[in-house]
Picture 1 (cartoon, rainbow, N blue to C red):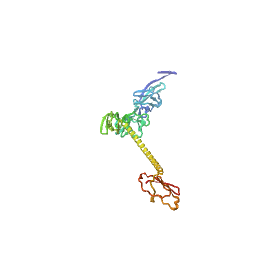
Picture 2 (picture 1 turned 45 degrees about the horizontal axis):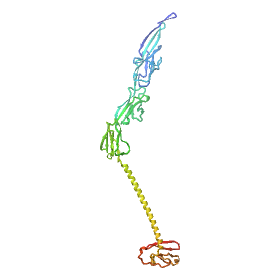
Picture 3 (picture 1 turned 30 degrees about the vertical axis):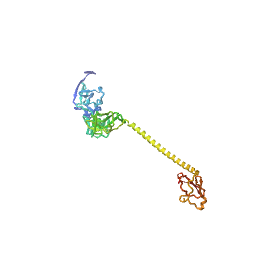
Picture 4 (picture 1 turned 180 degrees about the vertical axis):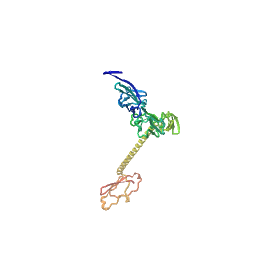
Length: 440
């Protein structure tokens, strides 16, 4: 290309040249030269470049697998450099496919000469570049184990993380952080493993807790547990009815064999359910079921079956009614006996009174006189007090004994069986009446 200006001729020549990195002040520096980053994380490919004085940077580019990285075509890439000396590039949401060598290139121009000026364009490549390795966290362990065995879980990466070379590992089960786990470095120890350890495990590192590994399922095999027997229908079992016993348990793998026993030693049937039709009292007893799988076996707690007679309830009710009736009869009998006894006592008293009254009017003497009864007669009274003592009249049949007459014991009469009761009345100064009934 030629330009004519003010009577002089300026000749400009343009050519390009590739310069080897590091020669004559040309340099691209990567820091660090190797990067290991987690998948889905963000990484900065930090670099700087230098060139001889007088050059002007006209173009910058990053290459990846011999292809130009074009930020305008990939929203995950952003160029942070300038056309002076910074060539940093950021990549977000890293993928394993992003692993590769990246290098930076730039082009410059320089004008040479005064009369005949030339523009020289030069391109510089920062190769070898920076190596990027994208890795994911991976929880590794034996996924199927038997209860009681020791199990070790490992959290691993394919390279050492550049931004956290000695990370603290975090273990999660079913997306919940484990409390007080037994860990060392990137290992989790389950020793011995139990059925409760079954679940989905993942791991993460501090600083990137939001970037856990993919979940891996730990399956723990164990023999039957919590074996039990249920009865249907529930409630009282009556002779002639039907019942079904069902065996349930917790096991992994599932129970493949159920065996039924009566009173432990007598094997009755097999299968998860055992039905008894037209049940009788002979079927009463303790029933057990044994659950088996490839790991082990367990026998249930006993289930007591009591078969009641069909009419037992009616008989019990009848017996109860009879007992109540007998008790009532006994109570009534005792009550009537007491009332009869009381009535008889009242009648006897009334008869005695009537006899006394009739005896006073009877004219047939039974006793002529009473004598020699100092041992049974009225008590001896002092003469001083004799005036105060009166003898009641003793009446015989058609004969009255004077008040102060001498009483002599008469000879027994032939009609002794007709004796009546005589009333002897003593009057004392205290005016107390004493009645003495004497039957001879």
